[in-house]
View (cartoon, rainbow, N blue to C red):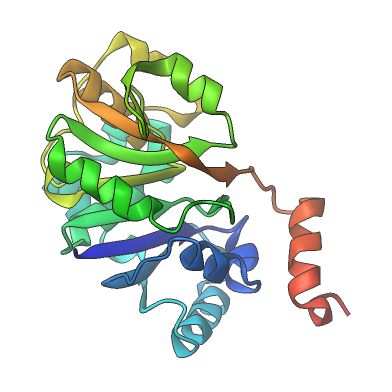
Length: 254
């Protein structure tokens, strides 16, 4: 099955992803031979420095290609009948995902935000299980692992369950597996009151718009019962980010 692995970097996390083993470990824990492994670069101060680090990752085979989001932003917005005014503050949180969907040519996209990674204890077939549920259930539009080992929260949010998945409403841009054709459509102008739970500072962002589309059409997500991803926000000078970089390459801080 053709699947693109993708992630994105911006000013606050590009060093964490491109100067440590974090991305390599995330890909390894997917246990899948991806058709493509793409990196989207967005909102960085020194593009040349980020580009240089991305080229090294291509040389070592960790990724296949990097994309400058700005190069395709206008075309992606036009394709989806969106603009910066409609997205408001959500533009900066959304444009990388919209560009990646616009450009994707594989049947599925597996997305991780830069501050999200797969936990190492997931079963080797977790992604195969996610593909399988999307293949068999057309009303399921998204598959994700549980978040931060909070299986009870996933259960509480579900409408029903089976032996492997909790099925319910909701969408997060931290991690998702989607059918590309579903998300290439002009689906980003729905509104549902329940989607107002997303942070106000994000404006009319991508994940809020997807959530509204899914709720208005009674589409569900499948959350895996047997594996989790780990998400932690990083600030530019986050102590834990520096520690992670240090232990992968201590010479960076000499």
